[in-house]
Length: 224
Length: 291
Image (cartoon, rainbow over all chains, first blue to last red; front, top):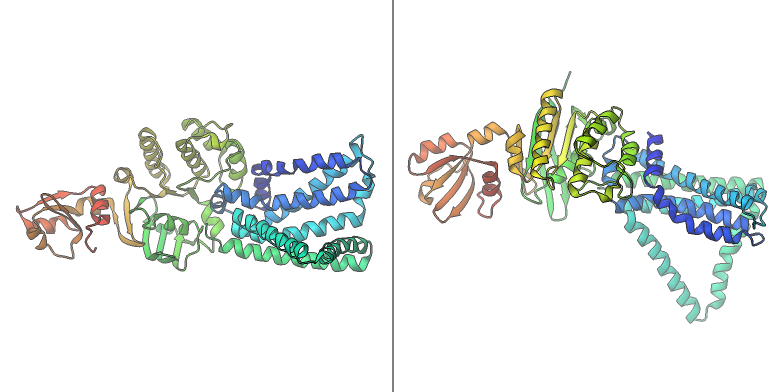
């Protein structure tokens, strides 16, 4: 049944995933920039997963959620398929960037770099955290959920900007964004050693598991 | 042992803000066509959604072929062909892609049946769903529902938006399904003539409550409309009165026992056979009497 649910998601929602195309245009351009390959690959994996996570929002908009729920398959399996599809699409977009790094004539990237354990693990970590965070919202609230989620980020961004820009907290802004940057860099360097790899794997695993459990409960309780 | 009923609802409850289904109880015997009628907002779609477990019931029991519709959800749904009032399919995908993607879920799916129906319904399989007319969308939903050997068809307003010729054809097909293959069918509709043509059991719902669930013969042969002066109508047993409407010439009363009414009013009023339309109007109308 999971196979059918996956097949359905990929067959009927492929068009939705074409939304990633503009990212690949940017990637193609960036391949001429030294050291951009890894960043592009991590970004592609992240964006691919995120895009696939919003399939449920698209189905909500098309009013197909009720059709899906009338099929002889449990909502748990449908949710499971959504998580798997997010990882499949994330992996595929990552591989496309790796292929572009190897094939594009103007590429100055070393495609082998893109398959370093550290790079792959960073992509998996960031994509997983995005999936874990967004999936329950999308499954419970559909398109509205995505809009509210993104809207909330916008509001937080504007509030932060106003607070930092107009209340003399420029150093705070630097601190805030610097912390995020340093966090990602630290994570990236840490992922070269066994200890941090295990710690990160546990955190990511538990987050995705909790997110999945929550998504199943929300999907099963949702009135369509 | 084969269960007697295709569908059983007992004491089913669901509450929304401003609306509640109250202890809905009715059955549909195997091999019968059941019609669900009632005014807009009376709860027909809610009942159908509860049977399909699209919404969660708060109390009661729903059994399909003796199986609990929640505990045995996958098996129950594999035996149901479902047509939603507003069919929801993927707008930008061809009908054939949707057939491939959705048909795979049903263990008894038949491509042969689907293609035969698609030809009969003149469905353009290579066209995108959004390019279809409303009628064609309903036909596609019907073709999907009829192609997996369902034992029970559940349809919410399936004939709405269909032209009269196809509507008649569809009803004929539903009757044939029943005769040839022993299927059971439950459908809601506003078009009462459709029900009169094919339904074996008619269930009337109003304000979230089942007012009656009777066989077509019990209803159309047993119930009657009494037309006469208010004075005469007052003589009727209040227990028989199911609805009342004041007209220019007097009063129209819906009664649940035409023979008993005839004995009371004699030649002082006219006692006519009823149509479902009259039942709907008299029971749901503004001058309705407490049932």
